[in-house]
Length: 190
Image (cartoon, rainbow, N blue to C red; front, side, top):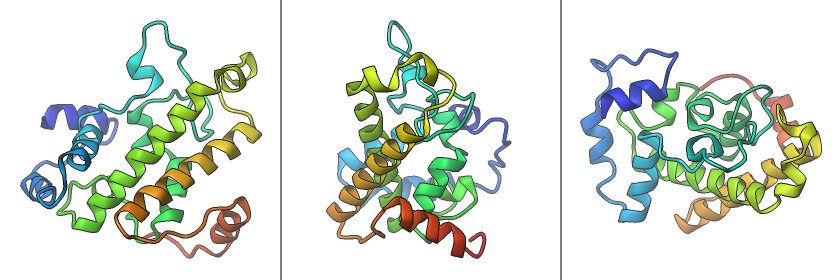
């Protein structure tokens, strides 16, 4: 399992001597099996991404607008666009990837937010696949156009908020104006 996780985080090198993975596993105890699987799939590179599913399926670029990268979990671990959306939805989110993804003594709230981002990504991915005629165009093979990015950001935020509500958590209401204002007033890392 550690090898699979290490591969997912490349090119970053994980210090398994400081990661307390047993605490991460223990943090899953209060959750139902569906939510536990969301977290385990996140840790084991088992998101349903177009690059992972391969085959005859179309391989999309980053669903959030990064240029020249494909739709794959290894990119989303550090994707600046997805991180920005996630940080907007969960202001206490760590800038450290190992903390954000639940590898350094996560608490219940950390696990809940991993479930939220899993659900949000999969809702976004489903939207893109259902609207392939819009997203699968020749001019969007390397990067989604701005209007496509804005729609995927909205889908992500709506799904994130819905999942958070299931856990009785509140999130900021996403609008393009709200995230721009938040970026303008953001005072730095946590």
